[in-house]
Image (cartoon, rainbow, N blue to C red; front, side, top):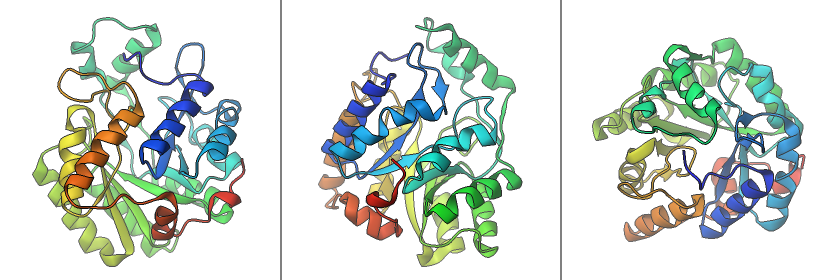
Length: 289
């Protein structure tokens, strides 16, 4: 749907390094089948770009455990277990994940799997049960990997509080609140405020709050979050756009745009080492790549 989406390991490495050079302190990474861009959790693809990124920049690497539609939890977890990154994403609940409305906005696709992927989201549940979450936590915690807790609705915050109470997660928490996915919380500013108030009440001083928003909501809601003292995540995974009807030409372009906004609000951009200190990460020399 966008010619600018990095697909091959070379593309992904170059895009990640450029985003770090543009000011991203943390790089959230997925892999794809090079021949057609389908999501893949096969470690062989990650192995072809992770060392290049580590060699070229000091950004924190954050690997997905979300994977792609239809993958088992064990399959989704493979890269994080093998490469032992400083951070891994962790979705905090099962949910409907409706991407099919995009079929009303796009009529042509480079690969047929894209149309099928969107259509199948009408009748698919993104499965993240309590058992799944515990399995991911227990598989990664002993290797020193910490988590970006992706919370798509208020109930996900309470699920995170449940695991905190059980001692399976330790502060400081990185709570990534996600807005604008059909099946999760909406993208109204009041939704942002409600999630922030709830997280404040549940976690107090034990967490760092961040916002990502889907599609056209990306810049308005990350700007709102930055103005409230939060952290922000941008990138082509979440939005293909860099303004009305304007496709973003790179992840770095989105990083530069939000960096300009954050600076205009009088806030500082954290370096990778400052991010490590804030989140109590193990350091780039302790990863498995």
